[in-house]
Length: 96
Image (cartoon, rainbow, N blue to C red; front, side, top):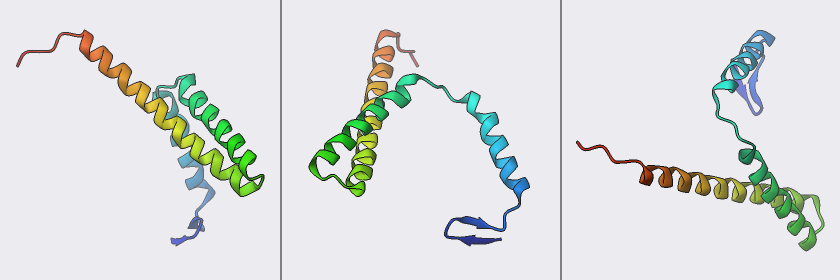
């Protein structure tokens, strides 16, 4: 096997099929909520719009989209962490 710039060169279609099947099998184990996608997506679109207002180029659009998506993911993770902490405060702590 030769590792090239774009991954494995000469990998067989069978390996790719196995990889796709593994991904599809493991997807139901992931907890999915619409907020996981909609919050980063909303921030990404907003970031792209702001970047395009400042400089109407393709590069600015892509950078704004990426930065907005990262910011949205950070906001989602922060709100998730706060929810977990609030749940833990409500439950009695075990005594060791």
